[in-house]
Image 1 (cartoon, rainbow, N blue to C red):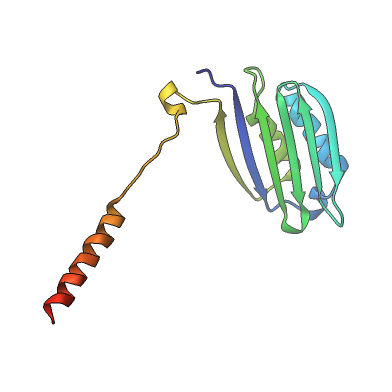
Image 2: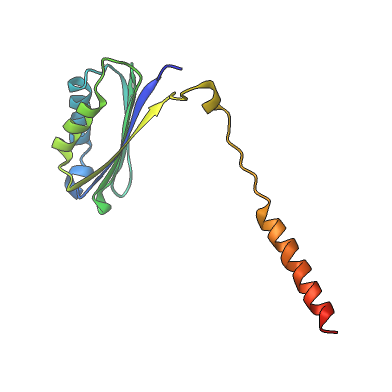
Length: 150
């Protein structure tokens, strides 16, 4: 089966409160990241969170880019999903790092639609009965021991 997309989940720690609570800056960062990463913006939506923080989402022709900020924690959760060969989600993250200036970054990349073979798509079920057998055997030994002591 063909790979359908690349999904980057990025946690940025140690960002400044002011940066993470600035909607204009976050919007500029996202739009610059989209342009530099060769993505196509379809729609941009945001919600300012009270008392601080925001959630912003860019709907892309290739999929989406979203950011959720937590200024009091100095933390931003970023999600970039692309399903095209020409877009560069890694470049988008690089641009966002330039704007947000995190002290630490944790990134996880997930290949979407990568099931491998047909066999890999079936759920794996593992059944073990050894613990039940141990309980039964232990119970039998206890009964045997008790009956001997009489």
